[in-house]
Image (cartoon, rainbow, N blue to C red; front, top):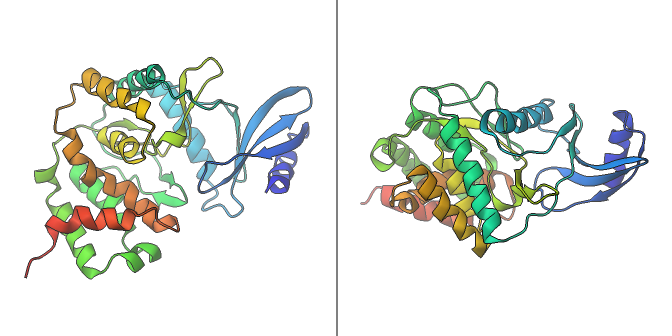
Length: 291
């Protein structure tokens, strides 16, 4: 792995890189910290077999959008081409309640300041190795149903895990989304906001990596962080975010439905599936046809 990253860095013109130390945490790509001769280290990310030539350009665009449109701290993009993404180095987040409170302010500002009349994004991007379809739509329920839930049907691992009754139940749930969820505007979302994608700047401020941005419901980000078992200190995030955004008390009850989006993505791409097939079936239970 490190040999591949070093070779690609040299081919991209960063010939002052002398070594690459692998880092863990990512599920789709190879990653490491590259030591340079006479320059600060950089973070490097690559796929042995990329899902698309534009995957890193889309990720760099997402980082820029979060920073420029939503005021979120993201790493500097040093290089993004078809083979490689090179970023400034961040550090591990401090799991303190005060840090998560800062993050709540940042995410609330992102969601409140970027409302949009349409759902989608100017190009498709990627959630892991899976294409995230971002075709513009006026109807948030139809957008979420078609491009965030039903989109995963037909993926081999999803079809192997979910039988015809499960798929039919998902379709019924999608038909009833306007009854099940409030009608909320679109805003810019990170799109992959689980705890490993929350890091810190050298001076300790929250910073976000690995986005799959789009304009959609703010609760997509909330659901992703809620389902990813953040540390106990993160409870402060949800309390402060609710205060800042006037989030109604019923938001926790909606989480299982919105979480279907990331559960289906995990089921499609990761083996073993962390138990998400069971969580999906549990959420779909009320939508099965009773004989």
